[in-house]
Length: 211
Image 1 (cartoon, rainbow, N blue to C red):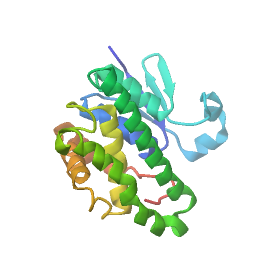
Image 2: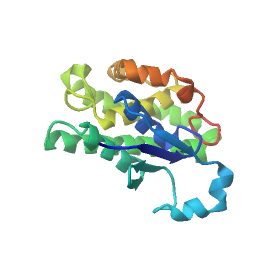
Image 3: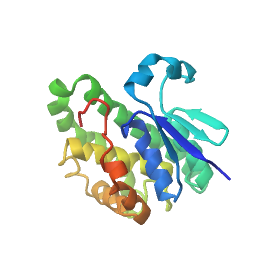
Image 4: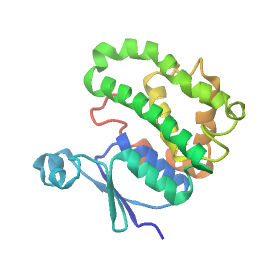
């Protein structure tokens, strides 16, 4: 039996919301150990983290760091890593693409929001197009990003694109399959309940108030 699960992180969605979405959609419960900036700046928790950063994830006596490693662990636990090695390899590839997209988003949010937003929004549809192409190659966009069952990458991609839609509401105008995919997955009953909850809605997307 996996768990109990504890997520240790700042009071934002940030790098943890995809794993929260995964857990909620899989019908799992978890605890939140919320870290304030004052607590973090004291340094003791930072020193205890393997790479000096959060999130920290506890699954019983297993402690993990690095958000993508945590997602992959949960994927293996709940059968969300494709049906075979081929699909697993494709999922790893797509998740690396999601990470590239996320890093560009975070760079804008935390380093260049005022001066860089216009150019970022203009370029965003082109950055999203590879995911539109991937969807078109898998059951004409009517399934998941890879294969015929949900995976950890679906949660990761949907979470990020939902954030991008807050930043740039028109960013999916040229990506109809991706737009429908995000809407379809967000409507999964347990996931929709989580996304509509105050727990999710009241948690800021990022730590600096920009979105």
